[in-house]
Image (cartoon, rainbow, N blue to C red; front, side, top):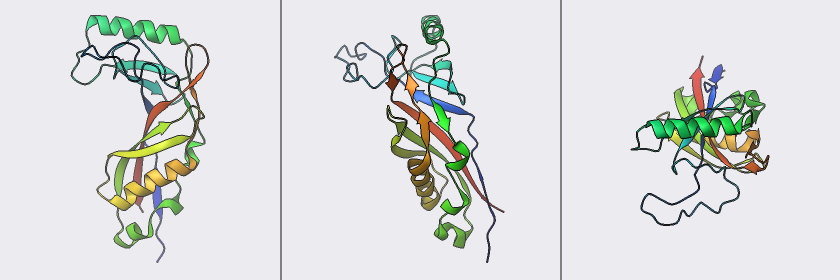
Length: 180
């Protein structure tokens, strides 16, 4: 029995989690402050930067539990302006990241369908270093297949800081598994 599989990459955005320089809210030193492979900003630690799929930054989201105050908005606007057209990252050959052959045989028997969101940690070389599912399809084999394929094939032109030095990022990707 042949199964026609339609795989849709729904994402038109990337989410880049970027720690900031300075101290934790508790006043203790920031353990990430000396990491040379992360983009730095003066915004609160845990601020998330949203990037367009072309890799340019477009918005900031405050850390969980923090409101988007006028000071935060001003800091975000200043950071985005300072970055100019600096690329957050650029995915390479996204259409080849998830293939019909990645659909697990165990899922084919059950004709499983679902939507997963996978979060990749991407190193300064543009290669994923880890993958975790942040929203499950409800089928562990589909979720595993998404991470396995992304770890194998996802590649990026690395994100860069203001000085043009490559930095590590966190990148989220939607994967929609549909049997036709």
